[in-house]
Length: 422
Ligand SMILES: Cc1cc2nc3c(=O)[nH]c(=O)nc-3n(C[C@H](O)[C@H](O)[C@H](O)COP(=O)(O)OP(=O)(O)OC[C@H]3O[C@@H](n4cnc5c(N)ncnc54)[C@H](O)[C@@H]3O)c2cc1C
Image 1 (cartoon, rainbow, N blue to C red):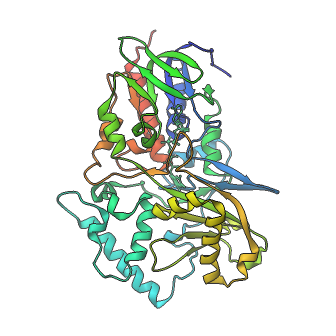
Image 2 (cartoon, helix red, strand yellow; image 1 turned 60 degrees about the vertical axis):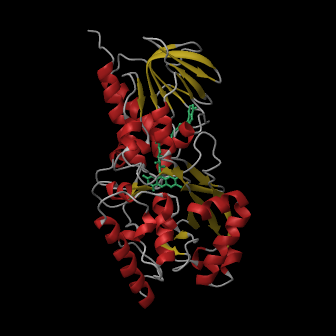
Image 3 (cartoon, rainbow, N blue to C red; image 1 turned 90 degrees about the horizontal axis):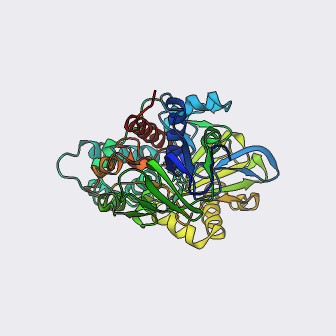
């Protein structure tokens, strides 16, 4: 491995976690401070973290994103430009929520639903005063509450009662529509990480910052030390105490605990006969239930259906496994296209982010009253232990470009904190 000087190595900067934030930080430091030695430690066996693209067996050139898929705020999203730099293709087909093809768009019901949903989100935006949860703005008895709840779970990965209005109102992915990377967002992030010296399969277990000077880093494969450490692990990993700090950092653990990961999972179904479903079209499983999937039919014209489940439904289906998730999705598709559609479908891939080791969920939400803790989580400790990752972003939390920005910013802080010798 380039730059990997073995066990008990002494590095300038150790970055923990090779997701979007860790990779962005490493690349930024490589560009601005070539004088520093940098090592990326990753517990898993690949680069990318929650950015993860897999193929479709037997079909060349198909990219299935099990994690992030949309370049939100695409015109200003750093990954859009990087995609061009590394030779990948940005697909500009409009997203379903931005004028892309949608089933159920034109029914009378659908219009009434759009109005009720629009009114709910306006109430959220107008909310002033003490923070409360997203369910507080529901209109009791409104028949569209089921769909509003479903949309809420897609946004935060959790039921409305759990997450903060203030945090929701701070979300801002930046200007621009939502685009996709044809070869996969996960592939983009991992390709960008390739030039970084990295050790995979290396789980950090303890950060020893008792002494001035170098910080000790214990891993399952031995110890090393660094002048500065950047942690980019998910809030669920931090909150679970998977990495011990000596001395402890209770404020960070408290912040991570109150910014937990919601859950969203994807199930990709292979479609035997592409004529059976429209291409690049979006469908809601149900217009009334909260526990429902959202379906992208043949994204990029590829013969698959991408089903998306979130919140409690995602937890249930993840626990029950891919056969149960298949049966749930097939029922919702059959309700729209007829029972014969089941025969055309089979499981191609499914994520299980809650159970994924070293990650433990999909994207962070703030519990009511906890939105400011994003800033606390992001603040460096003692000018030598730094933090980044999507949960550290005040307005672009839950996204891969938010993660990138926090990594980039942390890299600049680290560069400023380490003396440059002439
Ligand atoms: C289903 C799903 C859909 C999504 N859709 C979108 C989308 O369309 N657009 C978008 O922008 N975002 C989306 N996201 C969110 C996006 O993927 C994440 O916000 C982003 O990838 C998080 O990056 P990160 O670097 O903060 O964290 P991570 O990707 O979690 O990286 C942290 C890394 O740290 C490693 N690690 C953990 N513990 C240790 C340890 N002890 N030692 C060493 N390494 C460790 C982990 O293995 C991991 O690789 C989606 C996520 C999911 C799951």
